[in-house]
Length: 208
Ligand SMILES: [Fe+2]
Ligand SMILES: [Fe+2]
Image (cartoon, rainbow, N blue to C red; front, side, top):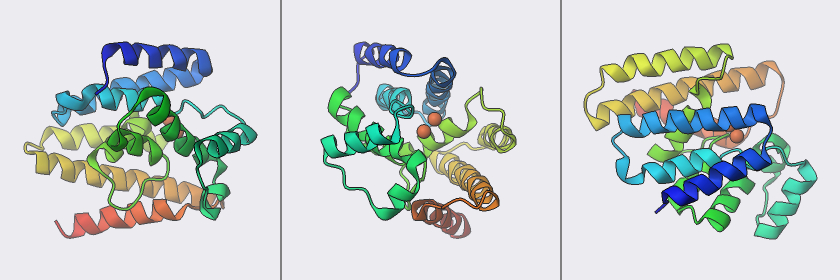
């Protein structure tokens, strides 16, 4: 259970650790998460979700060497695929940091862990952090604008929790598709967890 004091400590750490531009992004993700928590009526875990949002990029500006050092400190064993996507390491080290230094409970630390790649069977919290990171207000990349509009348009007509989760699944899948297209165009390595996340959500859409 995360209290207001812990959130304030995380805010200060963000300000002390990250560049101005990344701070704006992180605070925008946190605001987006607040809105999403209301939509999904998650007031009981809102603070935990906000803490995950505040800390989601906390190790992003560390060098590769420092990331690997953190992995060693936390006893994290990286797969060959994890090593092939150095940009994704901050999700792994950030989740371990949030759990150890801020006592972030596992379901929320997991959301942080999977916020860049996604994974098969993404939980509601995984999807909410993925989406908040993707559509927060300061993002201007075309697919982010498209996804932001799509989510807020479709969620208006969703009444039940089930309908809302259907919208979330669809929108996250569309976001993953954009990410995959981008990676293909740039001829970059694709983490298999991203493919697994996308296929899993597509399967759910087809079988609902
Ligand atoms: Fe990130
Ligand atoms: Fe981010």
